[in-house]
Image (cartoon, rainbow, N blue to C red):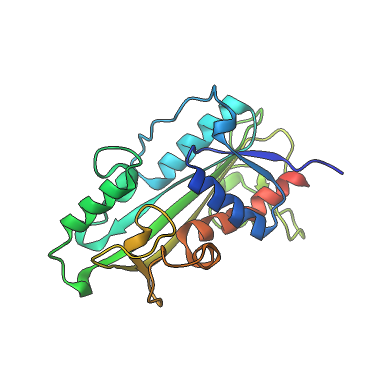
Length: 241
């Protein structure tokens, strides 16, 4: 039996590794997903991008170059209507320190404490990027094989005529980007012990519980990260073909 292709997820956040591995396993894409912690010599990537896409590609390219393996990365955050779309790409370090979920959440709630309930709309956004190292530069999108799946695709992974599933061209560098988004509203006090980040105050549209009150499976079905990585799963499945 051929071993599943190893793919490196560009994060040291074990919550995120577990969540994305669960999503991809459910999608049946057949890869061995490992966190970048298994490669101690890989340096952290400074997120200098102005958009989620910028940061996701920055991390995926850096990890692919450092490991020589296909790399997955995502950048995600919350966009609050009353804050003109912020924290956005600064969601993970909104308080000034990276990864302090409690402080980030406290600051956000303080900033919108006077915002009426009907104006507390927000969106969770996730951009997932896949980079497969190769000996060529990524092709331009207009050079891509006709019929490619939706999303920003600038590599040679696509649909050949009459082929239903994505296929890889050997030796090519591949760059795939997919986005997931879920809209909802922010409540005034945290509720629920699951999830992480801003989950305890985010209630998705059509639901009456926060994403922190949902089971992992419930959250995966509707979450921004679930949507982005389910969209990228067919491209990952092509790695084993």
